[in-house]
Image 1 (cartoon, rainbow, N blue to C red):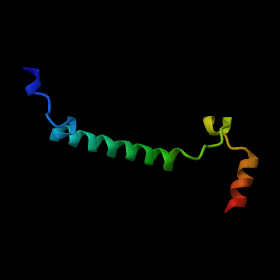
Image 2: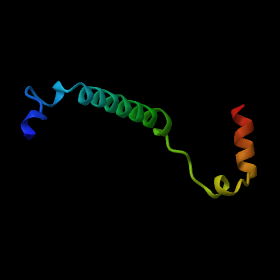
Image 3: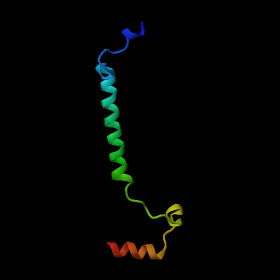
Image 4: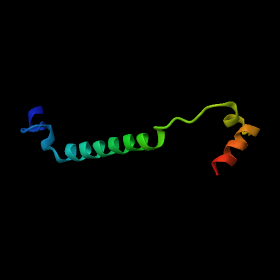
Length: 66
């Protein structure tokens, strides 16, 4: 009885399984692309970033970069 519900030529002979597999592969590619482009460079961590305090050294660095 269960054999009639199982595919005869493999799991990918069912169209729904093929579509779900393609969608999952596309989602994984998109997630890794976003991770690579947006999270690849670490940001310097210090207390000024947390509390919004800007020191005179950071102001001079910002002025020098312009």
